[in-house]
Amino acid sequence: MRLPLRHGRRARQAIGGAAVAATLAALGATAVSTAATTAHAAGAPAVRAAAPSAWTASFDGFPANSWKSAWGVVNTAQFGFDRMDPLTGGGVKVKYGKGSSAPSCTNCPTGGGAQFYTNLGAIGKGSWATGRTLSLKYEIKFPAGHDFGKGAKLPGLYGGNPNEAAGGTHGNGWSTRFMFRNGNKGQIYFYSPAGSGYGKDLGLGSWTFPADDQYHTIEQYVDRNRQTTTVWFDGRQVLSTSTAGISGINFGGIFFSTFYGGHSTEWGPKKTSYAWFKNFSLSQSVQH
Image (cartoon, rainbow, N blue to C red; front, top):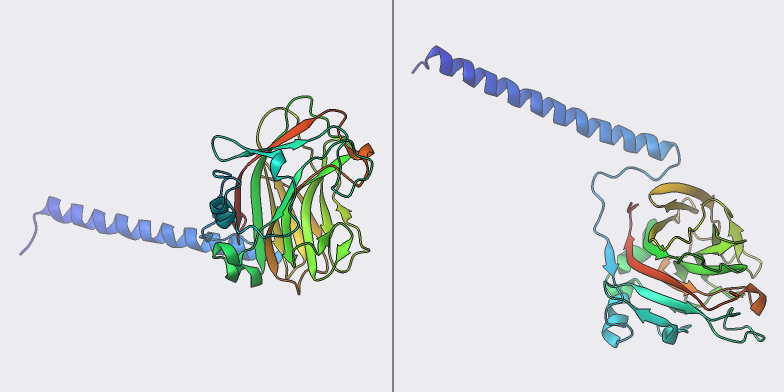
């Protein structure tokens, strides 16, 4: 049966439009693949068409056992839970006492900060431990007029055995905590078995932490094969640095560690200070 002329013309136009759409889709897929290949060849984290789902958690229910289970908290090397106040919306406020420093401080008038390790296997992500890459992202806020003192540790990732990648204790572990130092200058504070027994400052001043009473996003992406760590602050890449000595050690999880120091009161703030944290997430891909 022959269609009237006007119907035949419309059918041909529809078929032609579908062909054009299919061609454009194919070209788009080729462009994404080419971009990924180019980025990988340049040594940057490769573009991925579809990132695997991220793990996310909040401080709702802190410090109950249900909260510990949701985070996979390891029952070792903890301190400062009494200085952590959960907030409406899932965040947490951490207190740093006047003149406080690390728990090992012998001349500090007060305590400050908090710490705990998490375990990937305990949150159902055991396969991520042996993966090539892992990223940690969260939001942080400092109030206007915040006293940065001489510097302080901030949460990062770790690998190997908990409590073997910090405080001069070295074994089968590494860590890539953030830190502010010399005021509000940002850096990675890196431990590895190849180190001297103390952390190594990487990229000091590559970004700054504003004291503006606003949340800012920070992300680190660790590649064990390439032995590198890349940092984004508010979605902008600010650092990519070598973190040698980690390739043979599996990912452990989050190293939530924040305190002033150093190990003496001179590191601490001149007044009681606070920092706010929220929206922690882990992924095997870049998240921003």
